[in-house]
Image (cartoon, rainbow, N blue to C red):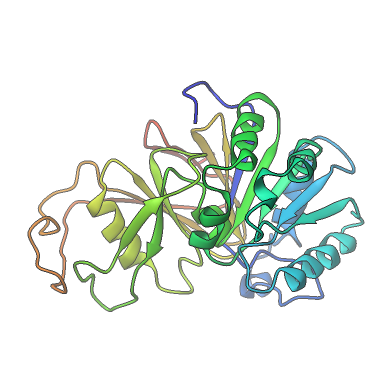
Length: 285
């Protein structure tokens, strides 16, 4: 990714975003007085400034790409939006094809579905498709969204493995190269429901130059100018900052040993809160 300020917008979604009455509504829908139906999917339309933007969904990170496509057709139809197209990048020749590039050039929004972030990187790394995605992010107002594994793949480095223990155990977490749309952070999703605080914390301990972003379900961070992140949705986003941490055994513990760490800085963001990925500063509004 170039060092210049991108003109595009990134939307990192924590998974299980509200997709309308045909799908299970997030649990918080029954508890928040200010709940907004299908907030995140509506936001993707709003960010383009168009009434009927062209939305494309990359479904090939999923084991069930056709079912994934049908789900988004129903979700956006409920919002009165029918200008959706889809692409499956599982065939090795597809991400370098003229058809795939023409598809991407025509879009106002591209949404990467959930599934497996390693699978997505295998499909896109080093391809013309990813190069064009970078170029459009830098030079146009393209909205690039990812949900679950889709958003985990956006940073320069991504989480690809991490166990769910009651303790952080040395060697549990693995990192790999991501899509490099966003620097300086690591992203985890389904963060609260699946108990992923430990694995994101360990990732930050291993790579303290990166801020950890833990996204709850039906929650997103909208990143403008490559650095300014605003929380939207019904849940919360957790920021873990370890660049000034205190004592930790992360560098000396043998594999399988429990890890400790002191003086991590943690922020909990809800709708309207902002966080500077470059400045590492929280703003309530």
